[in-house]
Length: 212
Image (cartoon, rainbow, N blue to C red; front, side, top):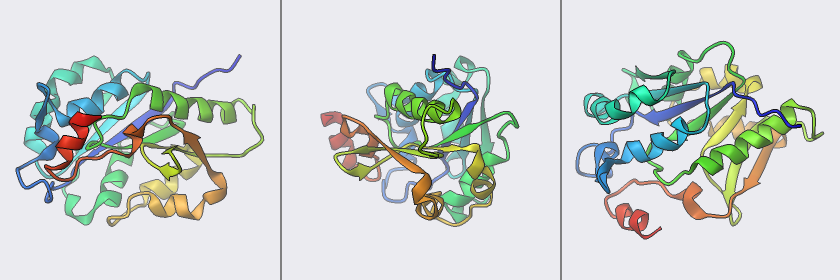
């Protein structure tokens, strides 16, 4: 029987400046009685992860306040502040890596402005990694990414072999270069809904969110 690993962590990136949203922090914008970041965080809490790291930067105080009701719903949910958040997403990912426990075998890199990512998407990616860990495939895959109708989305799950590279990221490219440099290790997981592509950058994007 396939044994799913429970030694997975998630880094939820919540350090951005929300410059295109034009109304303070988009992550604390209320959508159906909950701040946007709560919609992103709740599926992670339900996904049986060993550890959840939320990286804050700009708007850290209001974001910490917004997630307070959820902090006691996971035993290993912590926040870490990136004082150098202006250096970009890669720097925030590397900041999150400093808090990852040594027993973690895989890491989800998650964007906090994607509120419609569901628990089943995390489950499908976890299952794909578990197949590799149990030697039930010969694909030798170590990066797992969802895609919808041929378009790759988020979150992305990296196995431990990539941790050193992830911890050395800097700049605004995130983990894109790691994926690009390891195409043979990438497995795309088909997802039958568009949620893996929807992020909130501008206020106009809220209309798309409510229509899904």
